[in-house]
Image (cartoon, rainbow, N blue to C red; front, side, top):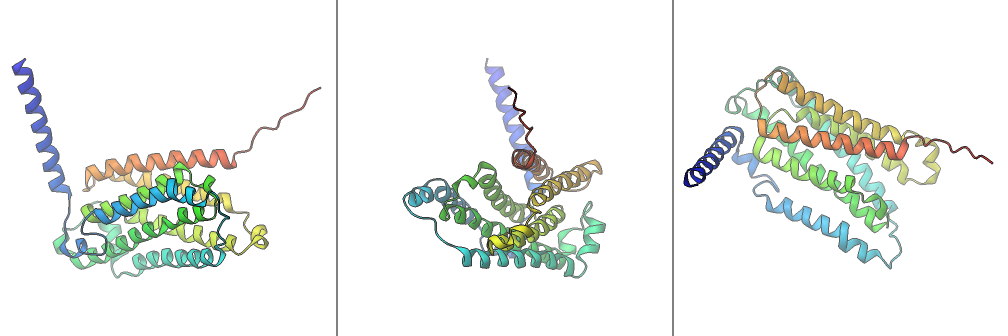
Amino acid sequence: MANDTQSILSFLQETKYQVLELLDKELVFDEEVDSWFLMSTPWPIISIIVVYLLFVLKIGPNFMKDREPYKLKNIMLCYNIFQTIYNAFILYWLFFTPGSLKYLWNHSCHPIDRNENQFLLHELNKGSWYFFLSKVVDLLDTIFFVLRKKQSQVTFLHVYHHSNMAVTCWAYLRFIKGEQATLPGVINSFIHTVMYFYYFLAALGPQMQPYLWWKKYLTRMQIIQFVIIMVWYVGLLTFNCEFPKVYMCYMAANVGLFLYLFSLFYSKTYAKKPKIVKTN
């Protein structure tokens, strides 16, 4: 019995050592990046997510229970056009940062040491920081649903997607700071540029409905996005690229879950229902 206990303790200690050694190799710390707004500790983003969840799931619905929906047309127009421009700016940041595209093409699989390419990596990290901030701003989507009494749209997929993206983007920039998430970030920013432009048009009023026939294609674009990102991560694994293995395993599982949930949503929302034939 004593030998079994000793063996278990030895196994746990060895596992702990291996995990800590792995994390020590994969985690990246940078005084400048880690000092940026909301980045120094996890408590600000954790607090934001906790307040967000409490409001959209409990406080907000109770507050609106006996109230008329707020009319937020002008606010929604400003919000959606801001989001459209902001996500387009993130795309601009990548494409017009000198040397970024060439570097990502040549070194996404085998990155240059951070100390040898600090300026460019800081610029790419700024793009990641802007992207992270966009995910914090995205939380307002759900707040507006609640204030407009559209609680049916506050689904598990919606809430999980928004809260998970904010936390994941924070953790990536705080601890990874790699190049491997740049392509997924670019694709997501493009999708959000199109999506918020659609929302802007929809917020203009019912007269725009004839021009919004392409709504379902937004969900298709999101699904295609997750397929491309999954292929990207599988490619990094297949070609034995240098990247944080723990992060990649997490992202593969996370993207797989998003792909499943969005596909399920698309199937329920847009799939044609079989016609019921009436018989005497």
